[in-house]
Amino acid sequence: METTKKYFEEFERLFHNEQICIDYLYNLRWKNGWRCPRCSHNEYWKVGDMKYKCKECGYQSTIISGTLLQRSHLSISKWLRSTWYVANETGCANALEMQNLIDLGSYHTALSVLNKIRIAISRCKKPKLKGTVIVDDVFIKSDADGFPFHTYIAVEDRENGYGQISMELHSQTDYHSFIRRNIASGSTIRTNGINIYARVPDGYYLTLIKRKSGSKMLPLIEDVVNEILDCRLLGSRQSSCSHKKMNMYLEECCFKFNRRNKKAESLFEEILLSVINC
Image 1 (cartoon, one colour):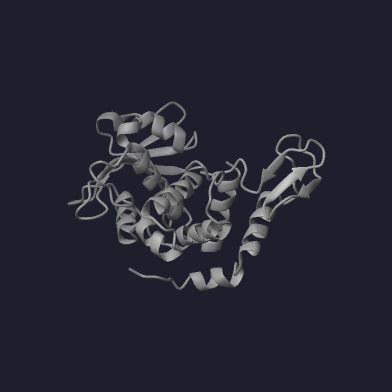
Image 2 (tube, rainbow, N blue to C red; image 1 turned 45 degrees about the vertical axis):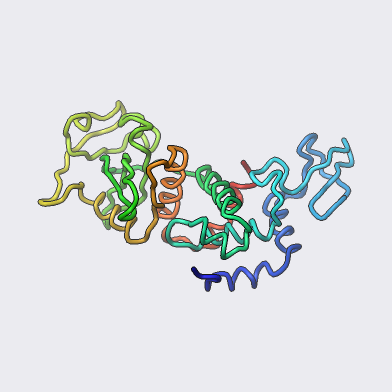
């Protein structure tokens, strides 16, 4: 397994010591200056590298208080490096690889860090799909040894191909709820018209679409699934994988797919903003 990645050269250039990492996170969290989490006063005494005491009420807090990083014993540089890894990996992040690349000690620690980053990803802004949207349910098997994900999938149908996507576990929702949560009212839903797909919720329009000859999936959905598999955007699912973990895999997959044209630095900042603004 690799012990380094080319994209970490840029990280080392930007964040070459712990204090720079702390300052970056401070400025990201308090762009308009520090505020006491208890009374919102803006003056403090610094009582440690990351600890601040409010001059008004005496409350002490740290840069990670009230965030997903609260109570973490890892250095800020390792949190930033871990987030940089997730943002730069084109495929699904891997806890074992992250453990070795970032020297996180144990696999358990690496998995805990990765899961918190995935929670942050799940809380990132997710605009609803709009316009014409193709909807179906599919089985996606990310590798030969894993078990398939059965998901509802929605894909924006644009003139130049597919746009944004949304996915949810088939067993955790229903067709109409999936549409309402993920697609803007007034949109046109394209389905195969079979069984539950013969209707759409109030406020949406329905048109029918057929599968291509020899294909098991609707047009564009097949293209999206092939790209997900080619880019390894979906983590391997084991038989004991919980619904919570599968949903985190789907969230990371959609997050990266929908931001495929954005720079990794933009994803890095977006994830960290979600981490500190939980």
